[in-house]
Length: 198
Length: 198
DNA sequence: TCGATCGTTTACCATTTGGTAAGTGCCCAC
DNA sequence: GTGGGCACTTACCAAATGGTAAACGATCGA
Image (cartoon, rainbow over all chains, first blue to last red; front, side):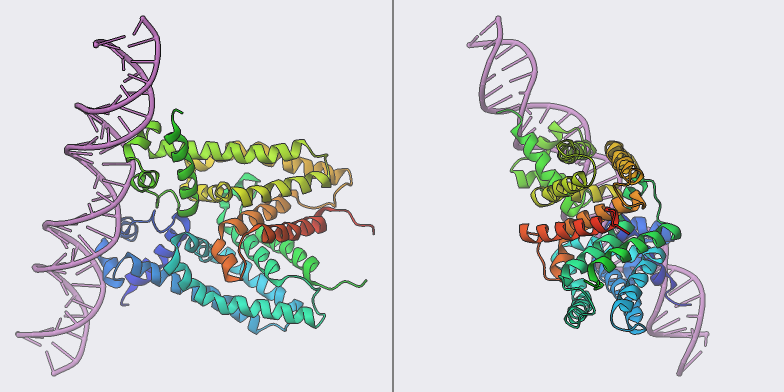
């Protein structure tokens, strides 16, 4: 089973980068956690930047593929919104690091943020387009798709990454809480999107 | 004008910690930015940890006082919710670092998060209590105050701190966008809280 | 059996980092 | 004018960090 270390390093780095940040994660520390030397990591990834890049691309693809498959198996309209939200929360529960990384990228600055945005951009564009066309068709209430999108994003990632804040209000992100938060978000989206008679 | 450096250092550190993170901010870099030596900073704050503590306590007090005064001048019920949200968005626009720091604390781990939570806890508790009593009085729809609170928090901080994501959807956090986001959040809260006939 | 490649370790190295110690200029009370 | 405290700098330092170079052992094809 070759390059098992590579996989483990990638996973550990993903979690560590998301939780403590790239700057606060040292190769030595990461290596110690894996029971290898720092050079074992540098062998698979040319440099720390190389590791960051690998982590970011892997995470972006992972995240996008999960959302994409949810989109693919759903019909346009409200159903698709629900499916996407469900997929997002599934990711939030099973692999919160992916959403944490999304946030970490903001502070890494230009080259990295641009890289990740390249991957996300098509997804965002498509979501905006679909909301707009839904509004044009009268399937959704008229409104501002971008604001709705940003709000939904902020809610999901915020809840996942600010575990401390969740604890402050006496919650913890387990399945039950996630389900209730999902319901909260969906009712918000329903209020914002679904056309009501009158 | 004594200790002007101290104030400037505190401000610069607040912004830097929020934007790039504590670990990614070096005392040397901070000092260079201020045009002094690292030791000038260490003179006013015993250590980097000392600086972090000073930044955190100042930020927490600042943030809380802004929200508190909004609460004080408003009447209980929906009016108070609106006033609080307005105050939160005002902070988000004028001093986004304060919200960014809130998020940074999550990754600093125990001692720091506990410290900040001590300051925030009373505010959170009061908000929950007020929502609950509002529900009991029939002023608000029955629901889960904690979920509403967390959602609102996540939305505001998420929008402020993930500037990159905002850019991805083609927005930028200026006053106009902030106002529209505020309206979005308020309509969500209204849907969640305000009792409707039937 | 030999040699080569792969994954890894040992041995270093330069730079950066947080921090200490010892000054230095300056204002002000006396 | 002088002694003392205040705000700061210069001069260091030990530890940690990202990275390079070379050696080592195992697996495997010829």
